[in-house]
Every structure is written in structure tokens, then in C-alpha cells.
Image (cartoon, rainbow, N blue to C red):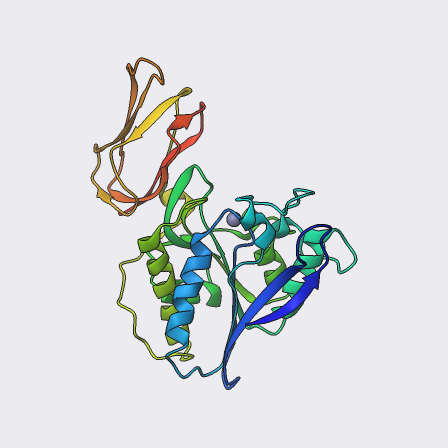
Length: 300
Ligand SMILES: [Zn+2]
């Protein structure tokens, strides 16, 4: 492990950006970034799982890993960079003379400049749990690589979903292949979902012939926005789920219900309109009207 960027802080030890590097350079370079959001811990653990695989293998090419970018945020369970509350993933391409998040962004952006393929890993927000999924463009080589991960869901999305100041968008502007992987829930550790993500990265590295294949094959569903069934709360309430992330459901299945937070009267039932896999599930039961409860990746 090496420290590739350091920044003074007023009271703590200096901020440090850590990089791990594996390989001999005789092949493609892949950069994997996690923990830009300090309260999203599944990406960190999934990269550490991948590292244990990389340590056992002969690597053809280079794998660059940044398991925890926002160390100060992680220390406080804070998505953003503490003190000024700036979002590192909203500070790209960064500025070496800017505010702390811009300086970290600039160092990370420069460090990954030589990579052919870049992967940015996140968890869901603290109130939702996400089935491991790769969000990819609707066509091209990036979609091919997304499929090669064999994660449970490939969500094909148009580029305008991304903030222009986000890392994935900036990598794409630099004509690097960039993918966005999301799994689990913020704040918590979803160990089994982490191992699915680690297998996904390992599958991609094997597809690129950087490593030797060793992961099991997972079933993948490929969806566009139109093929995702979304349920939102009809009113403020207490949401009780009746399913779990990754579960296959049939049309008509009770997904959960809304009840009165105090007294428990049932207000509404949420039922599947299509057959599919639960890809997102509300974790914090207290909901306001129109908040996300469930997303289903539909199986046609
Ligand atoms: Zn995030």
C-alpha cells in the first residue's frame, strides 16, 4: 500500500489517499475506487475481498485499488468530507489548489489517468438496500464489460443520469470506460452482498485475462428504466417489508405494507405488478410520501 496524496488537517493526522497496486503491466490497467462516500462501507469490504484474491494470483496487466477515499468521512459515518460537507464525488475533475474535496478529487483523477477501465463503487443510501448492480451505458464496450461482471443486475442507463462533476462522468469525458457499481446499504455492512460484488470484479478481471477465472457464475438480469417497477409511499407511514433483496417475486406478491407509525393500523399494501427480482428495498421503515420503497428488476 502506498500513500499517493497527503493533505494537512488542522487537528487530526494528515489526510492520506491510499493506493494498492497489483500486476506486471503486461495488459490492461483497471482502477477500482470505493469509499468516496464515507458512510458507504460495502465497497471498501468488497475491494478488500478482491485484494485477498489478487494476492494469490499472477496478474497480467495492472490493478489499481483505492478502497477508502473519504477516510475522514468514514471516521464520522459521514457521506461527505467533514468540516465543509463537500461531496468528493461532486468535485471532479478536481483542483489541486481548491477546497479539500477538490484536492482529493484532483489527486484521485490524476492517479487513475492511465487506467483503461475505471469502476466507482457505492452502497445505497442509508435508508435503502441495493442488490449488487452495475449501471452501464446502453451499448458499447462498457456494456460488454458490465455484463462480464455477472452481477445480479445490469441497469442500462443513458449518460445524463450522471452529474458532470462525478467521477464516472469525468472518466467518460476522458474517453475511459467507466462503470458505476452499487450494492448493499449505507452505514451497514452486507457481507454476502460484498462477496457478490467482489466476485463481479473478479469475473471482469478474468474476462480481461488479467487474472485466471475462479468465481462462480451468477444469474444476471438486464434492465432499462422502463423494465424497473418502482413503488413509492402513498403517504407518510411505517413501512414493513415482506420480501428481501435478491428474492424473486411473482405478480401479485405482497412486497410490504404501510401502517400507522403509532397504533399500527394498516394503511396500504404494496404488491408486485410484474414477475421480477427485488433490486432495491427500503431499510428505514419511517417514510414520507413519495419516498422509494421497492424497485423490481422485471423478468419478461
Ligand atoms: Zn455513494
